[in-house]
Length: 269
Image (cartoon, rainbow, N blue to C red; front, top):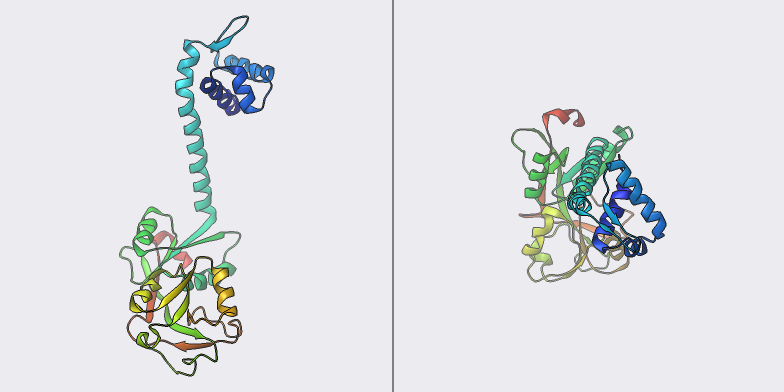
């Protein structure tokens, strides 16, 4: 059977119109490309070119094969992609969550229990989370409510906190509400999932949003701006000497559930 490399070269000849021009674009010598086409014709058992003393061009059979060749390449590429997806699904534990901190917590808990299996994680909206779970893109999901038709259990509760420099006027408070902090300038990590609605609760607050978590954490340590943290993500001693003050009131706490399909119930403990 012919090689895909020869088939790709044939397609380029058909696109360029001549072997010489195709050879230039492929960075091959014209004799080497001509030999490859002779090899392709031998594998097919038909002639694809009309050869004269001064010209080589596609014959009718060659033009017909050119109309099919693109589909062959596309089918091969699709087969490769699907096979790689299959391999990834069977060697990777994919976890989706509607908030980052429960996802980090679960990944750390699962890592010691896995033998060679990789973990992939994604934070996304709950609609995308559920549709991906239904399609098999996620083996485990973390949601704010149990999902019907699968195994779910309460996993954790996440409580919002405000991380402040010790000299900040609010740092001595024992707790804070959204009205207490509305209007201050804050750092905010972009990919916070369901916690994004805190911006709606703080209409007068200016947020300095960071898309990369490393940049966000560096700014938290080096700047004087407050930022959000939670009971799941707060690490005393790694905060640049800041104070974490709990937030109370509606919208400051979420309960998260871990959900798996029946065939993956062994992932729960």
